[in-house]
Image 1 (cartoon, rainbow, N blue to C red):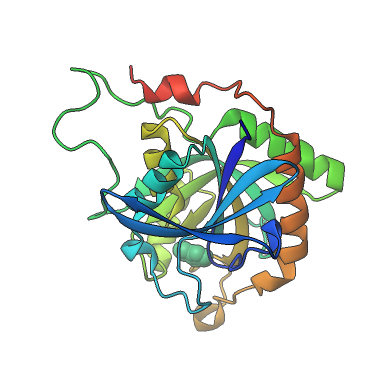
Image 2: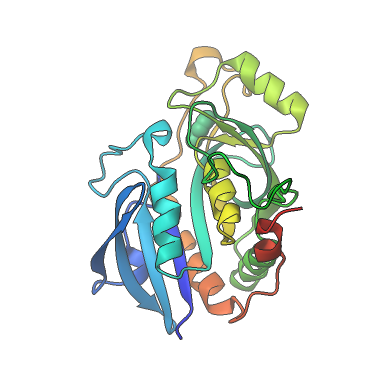
Length: 263
Ligand code: HPA
């Protein structure tokens, strides 16, 4: 059976360039709603591409309105075992300037009012909880860092992502607090996807793309949130994702599946 890999695009990764022009539309009906994806192939692997914000370039589905449960369930029902999410982020780190790329290692979840679990009522077997110690697949992260080295694309590893509810950006005080808590970058989607993937035993990694310095971090007052044009990263991102897809082992070697069974 062909390996199946999911890609979730978002801000900056609006299209399916990665999987070529003969990608076909696929609709998957789930208990949470129907999901539209594009199916293509790359290096003999089956690739399913989803844009979490919709396909019309208008960013019509805002981060707090994304149907995360339906999206992740759809990938699972297609037999996808690994998902790469892309995440536009605000940076709290001077060494992660707009235009930089990295991979997430941890998250701190400040979302509220979202459906962030498939479990309603009963949780796994009695008294068991999903193990989220390492929310992003360590094997996929290694693969990203290796691919970055091969291609000469610098990647910052092990970033701590603070996930906010959005759709607004943060106050300067919120960002200051997130920094004290250990956050490196801030965004609105990745934690929810990572949690739902783990619950279904899907490996998930997140490519962080620094879009702007986070609110209040540059000392430039009102003028300070300047967004990098993510289209400028497109070529690099496509090269990187293609290399990662090529390099991923056929059989998963990580603990993600086992961690989903609970502790
Ligand atoms: N805050 C939250 N989400 C974001 C940001 C930000 O500064 N930049 C890109 N996504």
